[in-house]
Image 1 (spheres, each protein chain N blue to C red):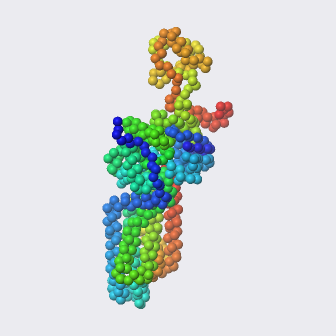
Image 2: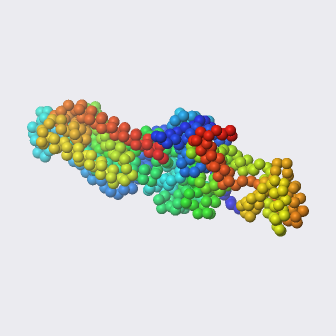
Image 3: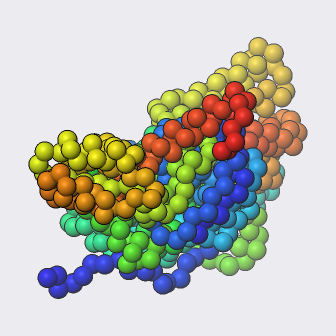
Amino acid sequence: MPIHEKGYRHYEGKRRGRLSRSLTIARCGISLGLKKRGLIAMVLLGVVPAFVLAVLVYQASKPEDFAKLAGRFIYSSDEWRGLVGDAPTVPAIWQVIFSSFLIWQLIPVAVIVTYVGPDLISRDLRVRALQLYYSRPLTRTDYLLGKLMVVGVFVAMVTCVPAVLIYVVGVILSKSIHIVADTWPTLLGIFGACLLTTVVAGVIVLACSSLSRRSGYVALVWAMLLVLSDAAYGLVRKTMGLGWSHLLSVRANVAQVISQIFAVKPEYKFDWFASVFVLAAVVVLAVGLLYRRVQALEAEH
Amino acid sequence: MIEVEGLRKSFGEVEALRGVTLSIPRGAVGLLGPNGAGKSTLIRILMGLLKPGAGSVCVLDIDSVSRPLEVRSRVGYLPEDDCHIPGLSAVGYVAYAAELSGLPPGDAIRRAHEVLDYVGMDEERYRLVETYSSGMRQRIKLAQAVVHDPELLFLDEPTNGMDPSGREDMLELIRDICSLGGVSVLLSSHLLPDVEEVCDHIVVLGLGTVRLQGNLAELRLTDGNCFDLRLKGETTGFLERVSEIGGEVHPAAGGLLRVSLPKETSAKKLVEFAHQTGVQIRHLRVARNTLEEVFMEAMHEGESWSEASATGAPDADT
């Protein structure tokens, strides 16, 4: 006769709201992602440029010395003057170096998203896990938002997190809290750039991920999209010299909008609004495709 | 528990459900039907995953078309296909399912352990789900279906891929959830013995229509003047006497004889004939159809109905 009867018991505790479902999906995706050693290595490599940023922020506390340093290693004197003016201030320098850092980080972001993104939906298709989600009280939007958050966290690891940490270190090194009042647009810009990068990269990679059960194919499609769009930009610029050729490249458009977010000299001599329009169109198309695919899969399962 | 009226659903030109009307009470209900009968479509509509073309659907007094999330927070689903998330242990997987249903993380882990105990998973719960045998996966699927304590369970082929003892355990668990746990169950299965063991009510679907629904015990009853007999001795005389009064005799399962007597005749007549012809009656009971017979009869009736409708032949009975 059993001492402890393991009979069916009812649950009488509390239940959480809808937002918690997306956070749960995100948490699971992140913890599964962190089990990939390759991904952790990519993230660590992706953070390396942040050390350069840290040195630059440290040097920026002395604008005159920084101008010499920048003129020697990064920009020509004319370029530097064009970016920050004849009498650069610390906030102006920060705007330039943080925006440059976040534009540069688009490369590690692309690599990390190639590693983490393709699996997000295609793995669920492969193992038929959509049934687990769709039998629960969550909507397509909750599901997709959770998946987008996974991309967002890994993007933030190489953009937002190091940038904000270095910003805080910069504030501490400046020995004056007034610097925050002068540089808060930089902090906002960091968050804005990270959000933009996450939305554009995340939505496109999720749309690709919903197309196939094979993550390898998805990674290939995503990488081809980036490479081909950049190649098309390079080709059109070299052969035709058109001023709008950067609109063909996803990366170039994101870079152009990040420049605008930080209010620094734009990457390309063309109206930044055109890049916003192109990115918005790409995001809307990807979201449309994503919803259609997920809706079809929902009905199928 | 489930009220469905005039439910229709088409996929392109294929009509999956053709005006299904159902009233399913609380308890264990079997959903039967051949492939393509519309069982999966019906379950998906009940869970609010598909919108019907026409008709109304109420699950647990909730309109599952306009309030699907509310329905899904109160039902559990065990899918036919394997579905797991690689890289998660059974505890992690079941707790994840609980959190997706809104349980806080601490409660989700506690509840996951509770239901894994209940379905009979011991230390192996810490292993990755992808390393499990198909029987263990079925148990995990049941655990994730009940982890949020639903009021109604949709079970799609719950004994798929299980060995006989695993199957027995699974059916025992389902019976226990239903009778002691007070959770209603809609069991969709091709295995009629599974349904017969667990359910007290059945719904038979065929080509998108309801062929039969009702209490299983009542559906198995014959017209009341039909008996199953086992005889010992020379039976020829006995059988002749039965034929003389207009009765019919057919072999039945288990070496029995099924005897249908005319309406005005009672079972006493059989005892009388046995006495007169020197035959021993070793077994006598009112005949009951097996679920298989009920099912086959429903499908045949449905087919003749469909054929009659298709040819436009008048049929007074329909």
